[in-house]
Image (cartoon, rainbow, N blue to C red; front, side):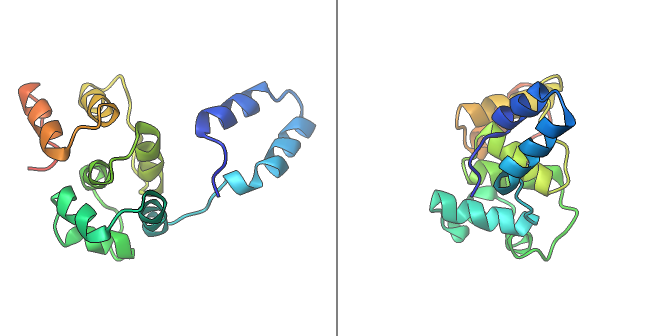
Length: 145
């Protein structure tokens, strides 16, 4: 379904010099422009990573609210709840940023100290509990309190 990563596509579009190259890029990469809702993307990730929804919900520490996100019932979810799901699903930074995109939330930004800790924790495959401890040790607000 999604064949190229974002960086690869960014490099291609940056290197396009003409409108014709832009048009070719758009045609050649049509399958790389998925149009998911947040719920569809979450369910795609469950299937892609062979995860059980109940286990993800449990590990997210946001309770039954998570089921409402998965069903599409909840809109305008807090960025923290989306990040809790990312940790529960053991997503990479890139996958997390894509999840944030579908949630209409700002992507992780390395020049923000709180986000930098989140990026570090995702990259090191920390659990949600370990991440909260790291945030607390850094005198920052935990992801889930």
